[in-house]
Image 1 (cartoon, rainbow, N blue to C red):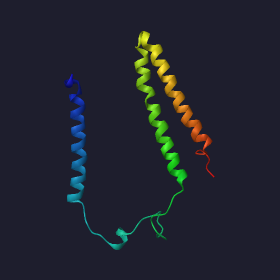
Image 2: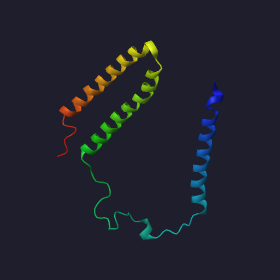
Image 3: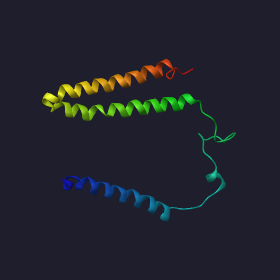
Image 4: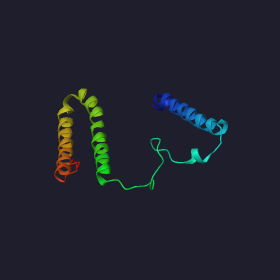
Length: 121
């Protein structure tokens, strides 16, 4: 059973090694000549004006959280669809579970809509 996961573990190990080696080699072998110009913040080629940390409207965060929420929930549909295809008699039970899942998502979507989360004014 565990032998079927061995190629995935090897791939994960090789990818981790290559990423760590690239960062380490870049740090050790790369040039380090700091100048005031290199140390300054870069914003579209213009000299920064004012503080670097400014407040963003909450709408940005709300839209991002809603996107991640619904995006992650939709990802659950793919394994369910694969499982449903070979479920046989249990397919009706799985279909009922997915209907309940989608209804819960729909309730959350309507709630966010009524609260004005999708208004961008």
